[in-house]
Image (cartoon, rainbow, N blue to C red; front, side, top):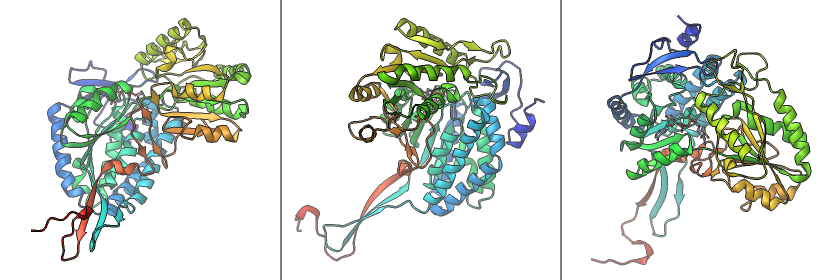
Length: 508
Ligand code: NAD
């Protein structure tokens, strides 16, 4: 019996008791990044089992897609209520498994609840169009119909919110789901599945279908690849690194499947001379080092006007040095652990490169190694660079902020846009022309462009995603639901003649 057993039991995870036994080849261990302890040892889903899960999801789709959308929305309402009731427990598990501080872990679960609320309303608003036909006594319309099985692949750093963005919309749109969570955070996925089953139990149409509405496939990249290549999966929604997307997207495309890609970011903040520097400081420090630099929208690059560069670097460095690093469960902690040793090593490699490319690095050393020898805490790092050298172009998924100076606004925008990724960006300015330019066609080329706030912490109401190597996908709010439906254009002739479009005549 572990200290976490009561929490696991409340979340329906009693079957996943932790064990210290060495995992067999078809099992894997789940470790907490907080102290490196083994939380559970879980079986890897076999390809045969995955195939059965997809078959069941395909069969269930036939029934679920015919349930009226507002009744599908009722299931998502029940899911939102179930999440509300278990918010604290699920957030605790997010902290344990992903290392987030409690406030951010609660925020993640709140995001799940928010998207459920959004999707419930949406279930009565899956609007199509009526289109004027050029032919007499004809009516044209466009409608949105359920798509099929949606495969969801998620990253470790938002272990449950990203699933919810996909699932809440996909379910109201009439689809069924197979979820491959990160191999680093499977417990939060299993707990979410258990909560989903609780919601289903209260819904007359969903109850008998629940195991086909959502199944969870555990494993590493190879299981994700199987999902990508399965022709029965209509949409593969994949969140993770650009490298993952580069491998996955051609596999889905080769079978003419649809993919929705939410990949890596390399997000910049520009600070103009007119900026409110204390506002900028707060936005930059949270954006760069909150979540230990492990958000896709983390601020990785800071592009500062030369006239305020030195002063801002000094105040950022003071703030950096004062951030409390520690276990997420210790009061006052702002910077939790990195997910694993690989993340630590990648960070050290990038910092060495930054130095060799002319950078001046503050922080970045391993922290708390005595207290947590099996975990990977680091001091957040600030790297003052001579310009955007090669290392700055890469996303290192760790708390490193590269700072560069700029002289004119055009070159600041060019620097913002120079990287291969196109997720998030922000400008701090009081100059109206700069602000408008930044969000215009000649401004930031990212999917997210903010003014006077940081790069991270999006709300669910807007469509979320980015351009270029970030993959082009959009999830969450706005009209992202259209990704989860197929569009049908229908023309109905209510006359007795058969006029052809474009005036074509074909008389028998
Ligand atoms: P990762 O790419 O290592 O893994 C993500 C998921 O993809 C995991 O479930 C993994 O098992 C699976 N996977 C890996 N390779 C695969 C392949 N070839 N085929 C199929 N599945 C594969 O990413 P990670 O380390 O878990 O997460 C961090 C990365 O995710 C960062 O690059 C971050 O920017 C990105 N991310 C992006 C968003 C976004 O919305 N744009 C959100 C969160 C994280």
